[in-house]
Image (cartoon, rainbow, N blue to C red):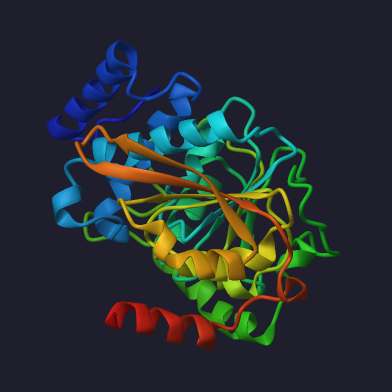
Length: 325
């Protein structure tokens, strides 16, 4: 992995620390392609301030607090759920790509979709991938960008390409067309130099390894269509609201895996049942940063509401009630 001289001493030290932890302590599981994880860590370090990825307190521990935690989570998910190139995976509320981008760091990655309706942070990752790899970053009114494999086709069998090459499952509602009007403007802003004098046209992290078949979605979850065999998320979307948002995107036997701080999940049993899920496993882990986390594995048992999504107005009202209680 070659990194040019724009990194300071603290950055170079973090890269050395990464190599030591990776090789000696096994903090990054061996199932991941090391070069890909290194590229992603470099991306998060470089664009953190500009993209507002993490809080100031987390800026000096991106490796331990975010990359390693996500790698541990994805590793545990792979121990529980068979994942192959034919598997469709959705990272809901991905932000700058966590934890879902770690699936793209596998030797044989699944058909991966990263979703975040706020768009700002995730679009920086999409632009960095597209420009660094010399690929075209498509901007569509559907609110979806696709970073394709060299053949130009996506491996994700959960989507059917439309005439313009955009998955039909993401083609457009009027709401997304209006939201996407700002997309070109934002992409231009991303390409402009930042206060440090560097834009995405001049990435400091070079030697980008291939990341084929990643799709980027900026739709609201409750407005998405399609099917995902596996959906993952971190605590950015609170539990159990995340089940309301994704219930229509899965069919019986599909799995949702959530990564949370410890919580009393059974107090929300009525929501779990209402969304057609069953809690199959709860796994407590200690992270490299010393935090306690809980991985929840839910199996989809039945289709509810004829596969129609829950209305956002209903979900928002329910969330307000939980916050007051």
